[in-house]
Amino acid sequence: LQAEVMLDSIDDLTGASTDFPNLPTGTRAIALPDNSYNNASPFLKVFGRPENESVCECERVQSSSLAQSLHLMNAGDIKAKLATGDGRADSLAKSDKPAEEKIHELYMAAFSREPTPLELKVASEYLAEPRVDSAGNPIDLALANAENFQDLIWALINAKEFLFNH
Image (cartoon, rainbow, N blue to C red; front, side, top):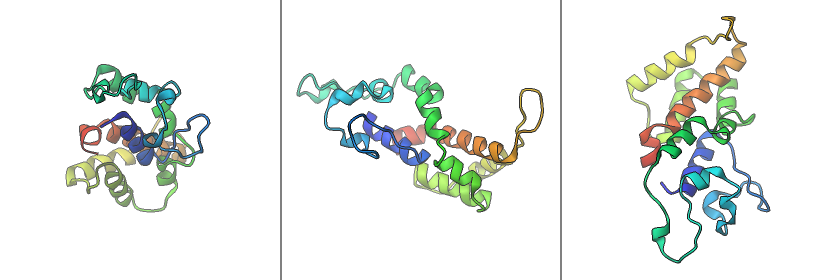
């Protein structure tokens, strides 16, 4: 996917939004008026949004790179999107819906399909796992639920199906 589309897709899945300077809140990356916003978003830079120094579309790099993989796995902006207070992970953790329904919602948002029985089983087991801190003490249940959903969404973002077929 193009850098702008990928950023908007991640925003949609996480329930976060990317703020661009001097633009209204909620402006999508695909609606950016010019290339000056590339410097404000490390994501757009890493994922190859062109600088538009020429009129040739060949300026856009469509190949994947190690920097892109590392950005999706480790970047602070992705972590912040996952942990946003009113984002999808937080709302799912607070929801009274059954876990399977929440997983179905995530798969529909990420892949536009239902999870397979195996995917549903693995995700359900992961969400049910208790979390402990570095000393081995149980973590607060609400915090653990939110972190489990953040991790699940992060895994979906890093799936090839999300990156190439979204």
